[in-house]
Length: 144
Image (tube, rainbow, N blue to C red):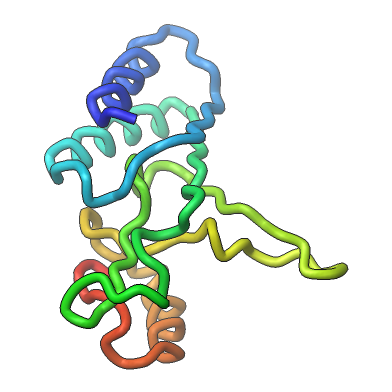
């Protein structure tokens, strides 16, 4: 799960003359364990893939975001950073679970807020509605 390995993979696929159109990544590491320059370089390479019609799917992680709402991570707020690699140019896929006859999103596999990318305007209303349901100060502010 070395970030350099993810970059190397993107370079290989970008330079492939006939790449597979769908790729799946099922592993990663905590979102705060890499530098922003690496995240931005990875995103630039994924944007090149998207222009070629290549889709990248990524498992959102076995532990959900960096900390759960039950764990105070810093300054009384819950950090909601998701796993690396992450990018606006890939699709993160979470797990589901059965609760009786009802299938729901698994609490162990969830999204989060990026420390690397700004909130898209198309998401603003939904994110604000979600934040309005939370206790004040329970989610860190950057880029949400």
